Amino acid sequence: MIETSELQLTAEDHDKAFIEVCFLLDMFVDTIEQFVGKSTPSLAVAAGRKMAKNMPVYLKNPTPETALSELVRVFKIQQLEIEGEMQGNEANITMHHCPIGSVCKERQMDMDGAACQMFHYYVAGILAEFTGRPARPKTISTGENCNFKLAFAGAAK
Image (cartoon, rainbow, N blue to C red; front, side, top):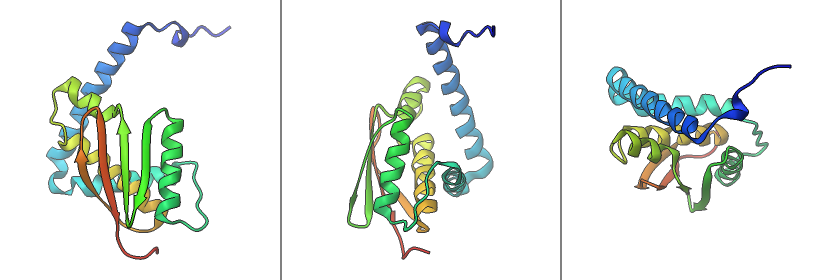
């Protein structure tokens, strides 16, 4: 029989793991900013595009509407409280209990700072890959509940 401790974790174990992940994400974001500088949004979009290729999604005729619907579906499977709706040529995305906001709060990082912006560009990269159309994020609000828009440009490729 294989001995595992996953089923024996306590609330304290989860708290310690959360603090460690917060620390690592803080260092990761800071390091990227230091080394990449003004190209940080491009890096986050590229990471999102790469992630989109690994997601269990295939869109035969991709549109922003279907891409947003699939993104929400997949993120909900991951237990994220996310909503998204198209408003004209923009996707309006809201996350309740935003995990990035929780990290920022724990590490006393600026809300709407680098971590939030990187996440928004990351999501833009995912949707850009799904649709074949660039998407540009605009932050509306951050914190416990995060709201941002993604404006889609051009025609599908």
